[in-house]
Length: 359
Image (tube, rainbow, N blue to C red; front, side, top):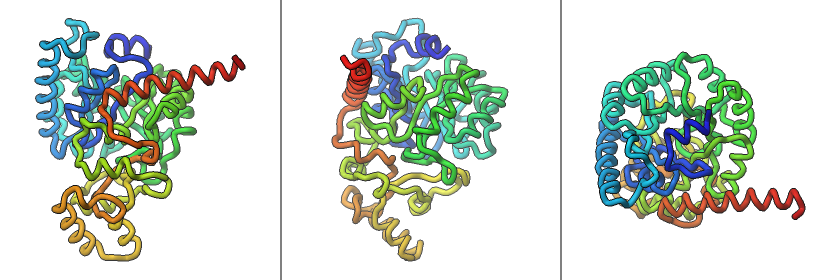
């Protein structure tokens, strides 16, 4: 079933199936298109407002049309396929379902990624039903982070087309209190969902070919990377933020899950189950030392006006990133990242087989 879904829905994708995550604001049209053009599947992330995401879809539609006219990309896509060769992500707790459905109906992305419901897994039923009614060409991808969520999804009336399992190593907003590393979480969910024949993708802590190979060996049908694509030239990200992604190492020590940076930026309302992982800097250190939020907020806002200069260990700005930051050493174009992941993961698996056979 998984192979048939991928072949019919995503004919341009090459194995292993590599996906760029729909990171809020930072995954814009340029990044999504670059990943898909390289034989992966790129997602546009949620915007500050749902209408911003619709605007990104309009931009992507125009860029894809230009590429097709100029014959500079997407040659593997049949002329009969009308779905856009990129996906789009929404946060259920914050996004407007009416605006979302109108955008899906108009632009028909090849996947819609749903995450973070405010009312629990049953919210997925409402969103999935309305999206499928608007566009039968748009499969539903749902992100989860626990075995219990997987079991609940199997009880829903609207089953997802793809499930993305996010391990605790991930950047951005993951499980606040009950997350688990991908090494044990992924195979347990793969086993639990085996009878459903729903493809399971792996996310969290994957940043090089070794991670890709490991995820596939654990039972994933494909894999998702977020933090690695923050260090892509097409990412919609400040230079200082990007340099910090490359600089940071030892994610177990240099990153943590905290709501502090959300609140410093004025972001409130995330469901209690979620908390973001960020690279630690002075804001967090001084928060731990007892400095008042009001004081931290004043210094944060001053730093924001300083621009690229105020990222890094002595900085104060939010730097959402996963625990795999220590595996990211350069900024590259997204196509190069996809190609390198594909080649290095296949090489890793081939060498493992040869070693097992003692060839």
